[in-house]
Image 1 (cartoon, rainbow, N blue to C red):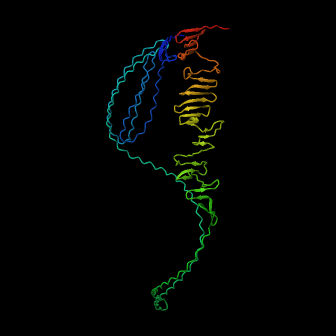
Image 2: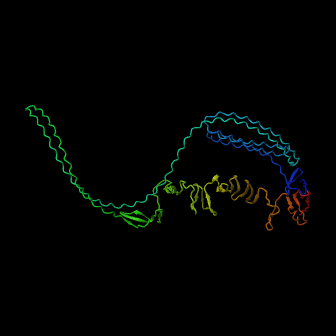
Image 3: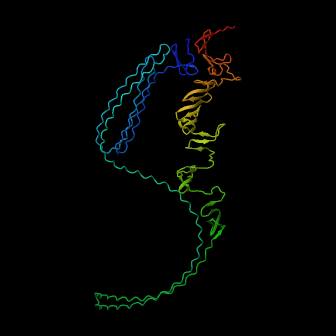
Length: 528
């Protein structure tokens, strides 16, 4: 292996190149500087957004602001050829201000002259090629040429005259009137007392005497009797005598005496007391209800019965029920199985309880998703029903979701950045993830890492302890340094500090002094 001769007492971020490899001092160790990766390909352009609807005609829409200049593509990695990175895509042109609805079209304004394109900046100087061997040191980046000045904006053509205003659109139809709340039940009418007997009819007065009949008019004389043989013609009939005058109206007889008043009704009232509601009984009996009272403000029912207030009509309306100020509160139809609260959403804040809300059969949200008591051996509450994206679980404000797919997958999901924070397969493994990539995994045979494993501070934590030691350590080269003790007394033998690397050879073990660059082999004796 090639030897490295590192300088003594370096400063942070000092670089040292030896045998074609560049290292940087981070204050603790010399770390190899990785070569810059090649420029990734430019991402594909997003699909064109759908064109927005045409706005109403009025004043011409303001000119949309010019789209922001696309970011300059990153300069390609400096290697042997030091190629310039690809030019970034031009920024998309800003959206056109919405055009007014077309009336008669105004005359087209003359188009402004196109501004002259800025001159192309001169290309930066070619960086020097790194030394041949392992990747050479990165050449200095050539300075980016100055951007050409943006051409002046052409003058905007004059706005054409505004088109005539389009005809007023027909008004939308009036929404249907909401159903009228049910009428409160009619208070029971008290029974009517029996009607007293009708008084006897007064005697009819005697009729006045009939006036005398007028005299009979004289009968006309008969014609003379004709000779016997052919009958002689009948004599003409005499005229009828005039009608005699009608006799005068007799005087009206005196009015008979009034009948006597009938006897009073005979209804009886039992159990009466203050505020009791009176109900009808059999016959003429009335009753004061001890369990149903009304004090002018509150109607109270003190009975102990299953159906204290019972709606018995076979109504199929979901809005049959009890209202407050014409706002439906509790309702049900007669056979669909649901008791409905605030069914018409007339209590805009919803349903409130200062105490507990209990649902022993589950608490449903949309008819399919619900909370229930756990069916497993542990837990306080259980969620059932289909989940969004085929994953069931609990979402916290649409940000983090603890969920399960109904099979073997489970985890804690970052619903903002669409990536897992924790992910696992039941009885297989569980991952801890960062930015979507797993970094630590609890597997069936132990703990696995997919990244570096290091303490959060220098020379302050142990790997294992006196009574709990690691069995075997499998490693490649072993890097040893106690530089952190150089200001606190060094090692326990001569008070100095060192920085060494232990490496394996085919027949020897080698120690490299990273401070001096000197190399040593360890003398070993073969044992039988």
